[in-house]
Amino acid sequence: MTSETTRATTPAADRHPDPLVRIEGLHKFFGDHHVLRGIDLTVGRGEVCVVVGPSGSGKSTVLRCVNQLETISAGRILIDDELIGYREQDGRLHDLTPRQIAAQRREVGMVFQRFNLFPHMTALQNVIEAPMQVKGLKRPDAVRRAHELLERVGLADRAGHYPSQLSGGQQQRVAIARALAMDPELMLFDEPTSALDPELVGDVLEVMKDLARSGMTMMVVTHEMGFAREVGDTLIFMDQGAVVESGHPRDVLSNPQNPRTQEFLSKVL
Image (tube, rainbow, N blue to C red):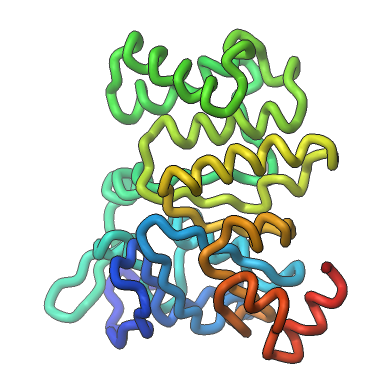
């Protein structure tokens, strides 16, 4: 995308009384590969939006665009009515500076498939690093907050352990605590349990359920249909870079309307 771009500003249909995230006409190309094809999506404040679909459907790319890990090719993303990645002036969009993008990214926490913890730091050190370096939090305050978060994710007794001393599920819970330490408005989860052994999945999902109960706004890419049914407010089914079907998880999972959704769910439920 060039530094100055003229684009249509037609908003996505908004059925949410208090939207936190609005994605409008989102396109993403990787070379000639059209990965996202006009995504329109709204996530209400405090809502859990679960995104499902086959591999290669563009699910993770949507999250990476929201967190500005990928540059969008067309469309726009707004979080709390603030345009992400750009500023608008006289009907034209101008790229934000890296510093401005970093400031926006502080409001969004992201948890990946792989835990991405610093191997040379303990769990506590992993959690306090960003609040101290990015937000300027004093060490005693950062440590106090980190202990609270590690307790919240069930790892109060693992603060001094290094990642190599933790199971995959424990590492993922440290990663969640690390993301929460920045006090984000929005949490993104990109298949957070897919790299875990089956017996470790439950503890991570329980932490995510606790976040949902607390009112955290969440976008979750997952294959855990039980989680989607129990916790989700909206379920989005994507295929070939487009939203094929959306609705309440129980409705979509029990009575999918689109043949492609029916085919997919028949193989995973």
